[in-house]
Length: 238
Image (cartoon, rainbow, N blue to C red):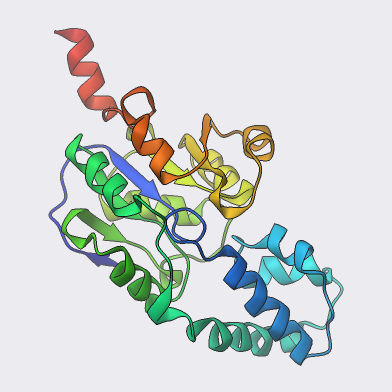
């Protein structure tokens, strides 16, 4: 876990990375498809894409079934990581992703990148985002025991800035993001840029869904990220 700013009592805006701030869900889908084929598993890409956002163990459960041969899981996951790493230098950040982070930070939120990806991948994404000046903390795979939809990732991100669930909002793009946030007691704002529909995100419990980072930025003042809860409470009590 890396911190680049001092901890305060401000609210925490937690951002998923893949599919939320960077356009990488389909790259992950392709890398998993190739890795699985290396080990003799021919799986439709649509099934893989639906599971992207889970950790490797849960994703393999989803695409191969829980009765699969688990002795090759680590090898398949390593193959995926190797195949995906070739994209590190060109990972495409979504338009306005960095602007969104800066605008949210300017409203008094602590920005936390909430990911269970490898540290190297998180570092590559941070480089592509070029917004470290407003990022208070970031999590990686070493910070969690169980991956989404378990709440561990969200809870780890909250601990990174000493924030309570009541003072936080999570922004993600998959039903697994929404479920993980909900289990941690944090409301989730959904984006459809990862390939999951607004209906699916809403059915999973997203409090509001936007098309992309730019749309959320445009509607920021009417969104759950308009101001941290503490600032809203102070305003209502004045």
